[in-house]
Length: 464
Ligand code: NAD
Image 1 (cartoon, rainbow, N blue to C red):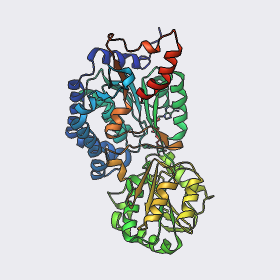
Image 2 (image 1 turned 180 degrees about the vertical axis):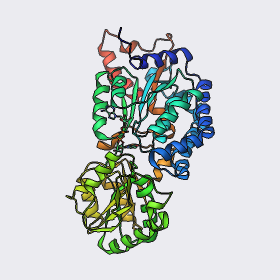
Image 3 (image 1 turned 60 degrees about the vertical axis):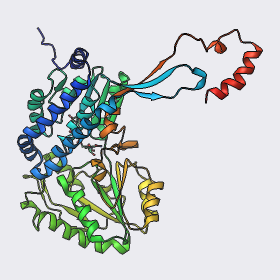
C-alpha cells in the first residue's frame, strides 16, 4: 500500500493544533521566550552551522543573524500586550449610539519559506512576527544552507510547541507539496523567479502573501562627502557575507570628480577590513555553492578591475572585486549580482543617476552618499525603492519601527517590529449597537419626500 505523504496534511495539522491551543497572550509570550532561550543556549551550534554553510565569522553571525533575531524578539516581548489590545474607533454620529473597535486576530496556519543567504535571520525574524500574532507555523528553510536548516529542524521542536511550529527540510519537491495545501498566509523570501511560482500557487487558494525579493540596489556617490568614510561603509555593506545580501549595494553610480578618490579609498577600505589577502582572512565569507560560483564567474568583468577578480572554484572563494569603466549594457548589469563584485559606473550628476535608476525595476534599497541636501531630497522625491538610506547602508533593517520590504519587482508586503505583527494578523472590525432606541428608521423604506430631504441634509452632516 502506498504510504501517505506526511507533508501532505501539514497545513491542516498545524491549523488543528492552533485551534486546540488557542492564541492567548501567555501562549504567544511562551513561544517567544522559547525562541529566545534557543538562540541564547544554542548560539554556538548555530554559529557552527553558519560557518559550515557560508564560512560566516561567528562575530558576523552574532551581529547579522542571532543578535538580529534576539532584538526582534525583545521588541515583540516589550510591546506584545499593547499590540494585542483592541483599538477603539470613532463612529459617525449618524450611527450613535454604538461602539466600534478593531481586534488583531491570528490568521491561522502560516507557511514561511526562507533562503540561504541569512538562513537563520530570514527564517526566524518572520517566525517572531507569526508567533507574536498567535499563528501556527510551518517553516521551510533553504536546502542550500543545509547545516543551518538541520540545526533549526533539531532545536525548534525542543524549545517551541512542536505541534504549533513545524520545520520541514527540503527543496523544491517538498515546497511544492506544501504549496498545494491551503494556507492562511505565505511569507516567502528569495528570488523573483521562484516568487512567481509561489504567487501562482497562493492565487489558487486566494492566499495572501508577503514576497521579500531582491534586485539591483544602486548607490550614488558624489564628491561632497569624505570619500574615506563613504568607502568604509560601502565596502562593508557590499562585502559582508561575500556580497550575498539582498540589500547589498549592487552597483555604484559616481560623479567624475569623485571617481578616482572613491576607487582608491575602496581599495584601502577592503584592505582595512580583510587584510591584503582576503582569502586568508577568517572574517571574509565564501560563496554558498559551486553553482553560484559558476554564475558569478560568468559575469565577472574581463577588464577594468581596480582590485580583486580572483576566483577559486574549489574553495568557493571570490575575492572582493571592484570593476571600473562599467556601462549599463554590460553583462554584470543585467541581473542582481548577489556576490562580491562591485561595478562602478560614472554619471555626470545626480539627475543622470536618478534617470538611470528610474529606467530600471524598482530596487529593494537605494543608497545616497552626499552632503548636498538638495541631492538627497531629489533621490527621496524622484525615485521609488523599498528603502532609502542616506550616508549609510543596510542600517534601515535594524530599526524595528521601519517596515522592511520591497516595491514592484523587489517584493510586496513588509515586516519587522509591529509591522510583522500586523502582517500575520487580521485586523477585524467590530461594531456593536444596542437594538433600542432604533435610530436607523430613516434608512428603511418606504422612502418619502421627507426622508429624502433629511438624507440630503442631516445624514450627510452626521456621517462625517
Ligand atoms: P533559495 O535558492 O534558498 O530559494 C528560496 C526558497 O525557495 C528556498 O526555501 C527553496 O527551497 C525554495 N525554492 C526553490 N526553488 C523552488 C521551486 N521551484 N518551487 C518552490 N520553492 C522553491 O534562495 P534564493 O532565491 O537564491 O535567495 C536569493 C534571492 O533572495 C536573491 O534574489 C535575494 O535578493 C533575495 N533575498 C531577499 C531578501 C529580502 O528580505 N527581501 C532577503 C534575502 C534574499
